Image 1 (cartoon, rainbow, N blue to C red):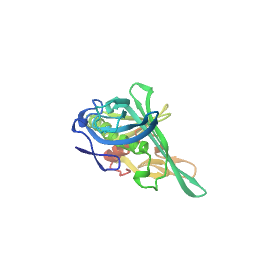
Image 2 (image 1 turned 90 degrees about the horizontal axis):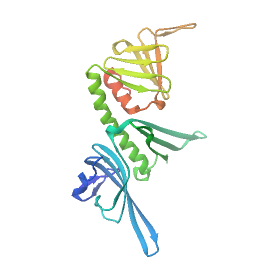
Image 3 (image 1 turned 180 degrees about the horizontal axis):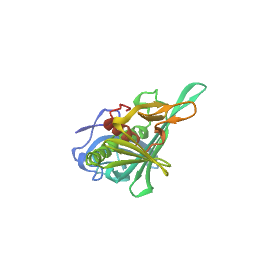
Image 4 (image 1 turned 60 degrees about the vertical axis):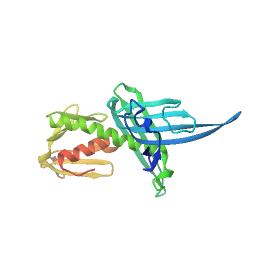
Length: 253
């Protein structure tokens, strides 16, 4: 039976493997990284399995060179999507003397048990290279972000369509999204923007600006409301951009 790896190539695995990992559920993507180590009596084959499933993701190690996930499989990390609180993604391009040199990446996943149970992927890469030369950890992180966001989006839509809200926490304030508005909840005040009363939504660099219909910037004073979001500091960034675009009507993703 075949399944796709992170390069979108078909790879062959045993049929029982598709349902053999309880926490991840049915496997959607499987990427195998092979190792060969010298031993006293020869060489030992081992491999690392990166799995994106319908219900979660995991990293596993096994000995031997066959493709059955049930043989000598050791769990390194195994997390269900419903155990996750949020994901923080930070990808930074490094420019030296005006020229792109490389990028760094960080995928930081916090579960509902708190910061002590976090899962992290980090490293560097060159985005100009073909996909097969990118780090497996980076490709794995991008897949996790995509599928975790899809899972969280279902809960967000259910909550908002029932009249509730969804909070995105920043360092010193909270962004509260509802079906008809977005609010900036701070210590001393709350700025509420109803979607049908927003005049402008635009970005400058990594910051997203929201202005209400009364906003005017004059020489000595400012009328109306304007708030900004530093997208790089936002947890569940992809979820926010998708949800805000869906409910506000502004296409920012």
